[in-house]
Amino acid sequence: MSNIKIKQIRSKINRPADQKRTLEALGLRRIGQVVEHKVTPSIEGMIRKVEHLITIIK
Image 1 (cartoon, helix red, strand yellow):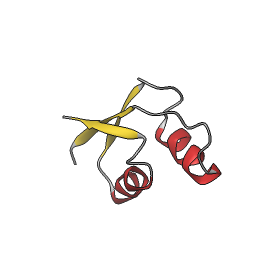
Image 2 (cartoon, one colour):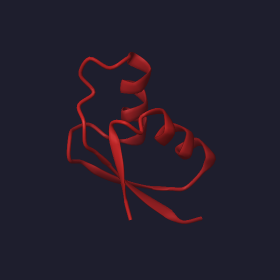
Image 3 (cartoon, rainbow, N blue to C red):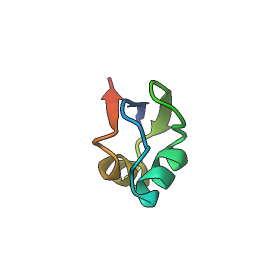
Image 4 (cartoon, rainbow, N blue to C red):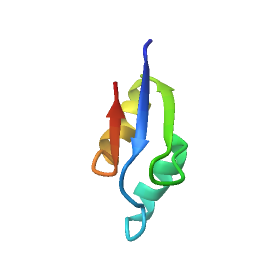
C-alpha cells in the first residue's frame, strides 16, 4: 500500500461534530498541519467525508 499526505486547509469551527471527529481521527488538529497515512478503504472514506476541509499533497 502507498502512503498519502493530507493537509488541513480550512477550519473545523462551525462544522458538524462528525466532521470534527473525522479530522481528529485523521490526526489533524490545526490549519496547515500535514499528516501521512497508508491508503486504506477507511482512510479513503474519511478523506471523502471532509474533502472540503483538506487537500491531498502528492
